[in-house]
Length: 154
Image 1 (spheres, one colour):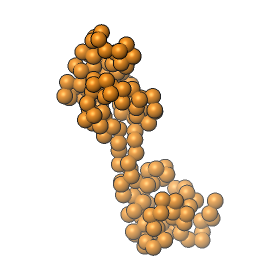
Image 2: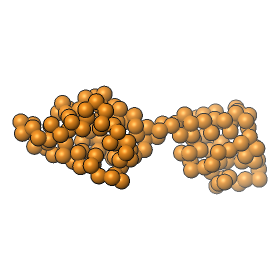
Image 3: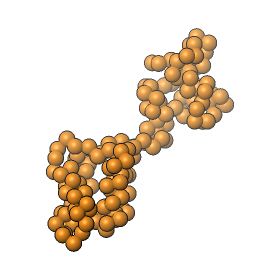
Image 4: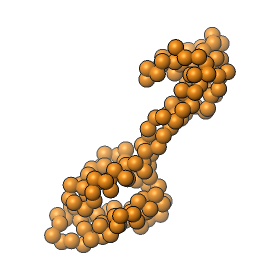
């Protein structure tokens, strides 16, 4: 356990969660609760399942072959299809160029807003504050110890 990191979270309270007014039990529960949204890369199996729903893969195939669409939009469709065909690929929607490609597919009428939103929903996971800090689950006794004078503030 990184006691200094836990103590710092409890004393600095950078997110304004109100730890100072909480008991050790309440603070432990607040730290352990998975109520923080985190955007994570989407693995290839999840991408393929997403593409199989609502004919999304088919939409990309048709658009890639449609010569009346702009070349840059067809290229984005081809790249998306390559991602779906390759194993061990991840789509990281934290990267602005990946989000721009998805937005271009929506703007070009290849995918719907609902298609894109479903993909972003796959990327969103609920984590605890401790997960964000890279700390393990804590109990009331851990909080009490971190709040004690035995752990120096870094």
